Length: 264
Image 1 (tube, rainbow, N blue to C red):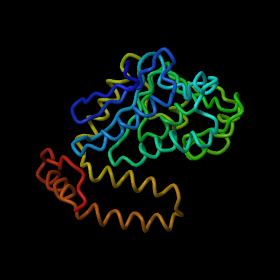
Image 2: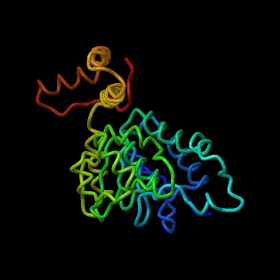
Image 3: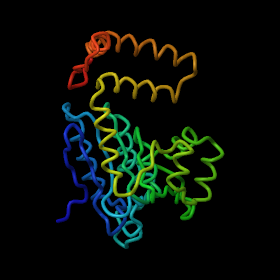
């Protein structure tokens, strides 16, 4: 049987590739299962980053509607389907303590777009398009879309994207803050690996704490976030990686950071 998700290790990075190119990497229950297993592998303490990408001309077209409309479809309650598959997926991505990067190699539609936006850093091919396609079939943006979009682009742009369902090109997505960088199509994975290599040279514990701080900031007031920063900075300042970084700076040498995330 064809692997629905291809998993490869590239140095310190785990590359996870959605592999239903004939269906634009649209989600099926089977692909959800393989992707969940791949994200379990991403918990390996020797890894420093994860890249999500797609095989073929699309990143991910969202839910496979052929599966949804089939006479013997296992999908009858869409809320239950989200609870079983999509919500655990985006929660798993957000919970990983290492950076998760999206190499958006083509169309990212519906849940596929919001899967990319749930990642920490998004690199897009010039041909990539981001589409909130839910309204056109009478559905609500899911997979975190209604939470992520207003915070990424502001409430009015989020409403227009969600209600009109019009494609957003990669360069506009970059200008709006949805995408970190736009590169030539044939270089998107290499460009994302280059960013992953830069992250691998940084202290993993510090990156994990940065992720935690930024996630916490989404639900706190400014005053509360100052307390969060104090708490996390206390932890960061006591870790060996901070001391090593300071010594390396003073001694004008490359730092030798820990290979794994440390709590003490």
